[in-house]
Amino acid sequence: MFASGPPGTDPLPPLRLSAVVAQVFDETSPTALDPALRPFLADLVRPYGNDLRDDLLTAGVGHSFGEMAEVLLPAVVGPDEQVDLLVMAFAMHDLRLGRATAAYLSDRCPGKPMAFAVCDQGSGAAFTALRLAESYLGPGACRRALVFVVEQSALHYTQLEPAPVPDRHTGVALRLETDGSPVVGKQHTGVDARRVGGLFAAEVARLAAGQVDATVIASARLAEAAPGQADVVADAGQPYTGVWWELTRLPREGLVVLGDYEPSLGLLCLSTVDYTVARVAVPG
Amino acid sequence: MTAIEEVSAYLPPDRRALEELADWLGLTERQVRLFRRFHGLSEVCYDQDGTLLDLLLAATGGLETLRGNEHRVRYVVYARGMPAAVPYPHNPLRELCVKLGLDHALSFTVTHQACATGLLAFDVAGRLLAGDPDPDALALVVSGEKTFTPDARLVPETAIFGEGAAAVLVSANGSSDRLLSYTTSIRGDFDGRLIIDQALAARFQYEYPALLSEVLLAAVDQAGVALDDIALLVPHNVNAVSWRRVCKRIGYPVERVVLDNVPLTGHSFAADPFLNYRTALDTGRLRPGDRYLVGAAGLGATFSAMVFEH
Image (cartoon, rainbow over all chains, first blue to last red; front, top):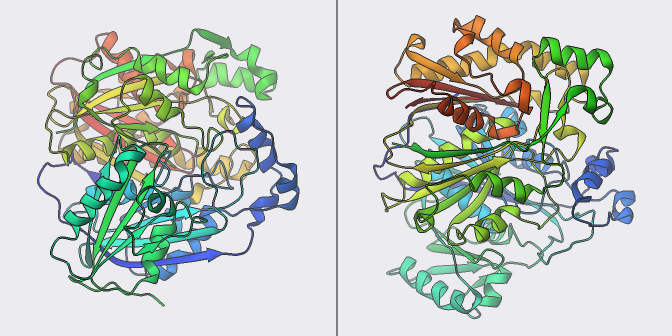
């Protein structure tokens, strides 16, 4: 059971990354052919006028966040390593529409942690999940947290507003605790497309000050809005996991700056992982 | 210390008697009688023609403190019970922020704790405020949902969902309604759809009183007070009988549970604790210095409690 008093105002210890794993899932979840999917989707879209995609419903495409995260779980935490907090971040919804997946994963996770999900923030949700993990970690109830960033590619109805749809199913798991490489985050709201380039450049300069070997990872949308600033540009087909996916592919060296921009919210998010302080485990 | 600055509640005026809803909910005459006589339900409120945005706007529209203080609101957190409620990428929360002049705020939804998500959102808001350099910063927590699909209308033999909504202004340093403790227990072994899985529903019903009692007592203990010091219990509105069972189990007088809305509103997802807080306040049942216990449970399952000092 998670138990806490009111949050204190003393500075929190820095969030530290101790492991990160990622996987692209090529298969389709059996949930894609669950007869409950169509009626739920029909109810979901009815007030808004989207048309169901019979072709996708018949084909049975898509993946479930719970099934993807369950595969990542043993790769990021051992069976005897108690986890106190589990946060899932997503933008486009799951194939299992009604499932409290974070709660389900808690039952599969050592320590049966406090668990919840963050969404309705586009690519910002992953950064907010890290920020919230930091707010819970500390000397009290939480000493180890997992953040899952997930996306799946099936949208079984016509889209009425522009937004990226992933072209593959991807899950990333970040393990955070009191030992590891410090993670620092920053979120800017009210950032329109004209400001994003300058603000991103200024933030990268500030965050990477004094670091000769900083690597900047940007999402495809951020790289388009702020061209020429990233060393690594994440694949546009991974709009919500891309920067985190790239983090797992880089050498664990120097300072890594991750940036993403959610134009629908005017939200610029940055995070740094400082590998110069401590190395991160590479499970498996 | 995280505190409630103001709570606004919205209960749509369209109230339907259980008998009117029987066909829509797929209830037999016997089940309707059971809900009415045993569970203490009578009517459920719906916002038939309104959207989710309308619901949230109605709730926030009652916040007197918000007007003129929009610039102080740094965070807007939507507590949503249903993991998916609108088609992607439609974002009523963002629309709400724009309409309220809060588009400068960091807005997001927390979910996956079902109807216990309201307490989570409050705790999350408090944590963000505690880390904010501006001591005058505020957070807005909103909750309330549409009964758009069978899973969002009925918990078999337990509860009927309604469309009430609530808005809460939260501060880091307020003097009224200060948060003393928060406890939550996640029981993911209750993953599944109770509406089709009778065995799971039966096990949930059986274990529910003990699991909710456990977090309630733990919250009291964490707050450093005794159960006798708790002036009031502010519940979620699943039904009356489950609260009688919980009260009997923990030794708390059921007369001090705010059950006024159970017969009138239905179970308003994550909004119930805030709706019932408003009722307690409006009916003069909270006096300065009172400690009160708030309890909620969500399918999936999550059991949560908080203790506040008024």
